[in-house]
Length: 148
Image (tube, rainbow, N blue to C red; front, top):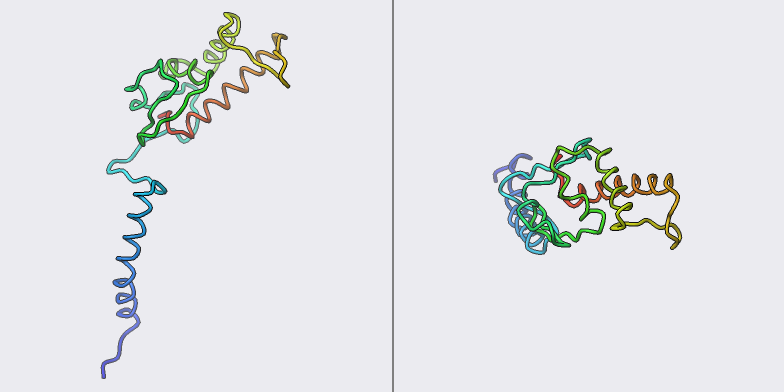
């Protein structure tokens, strides 16, 4: 009677498990739980001083309320994201994006509210615009729409 070595036992167990694990991974990919691409997606790990939208997002129409990210998922854009998205070309810094939001407020295309009441104080508008800018850029990054 031959004696099995521990290494051969591990190989045998691995050979038995591999088809099960492969089927599990395939099922998770089909169900959309796992994302799999043949090429690496290079996206921002943090929001840059000069944010840059992902090139694949640029190929969709910028006047839509939805855009497609690198994983071909539809991502709805809110009013602030829609306003700043065309400016995320790597040429506009955070200060310029903040100024853009303030200009949108001054032109009446955007407004901020607190507890359901419109904010009218200039300092509070500036503070709210900055907070919304940071939060929305983080959301765009999280949704895979920024490459830098």
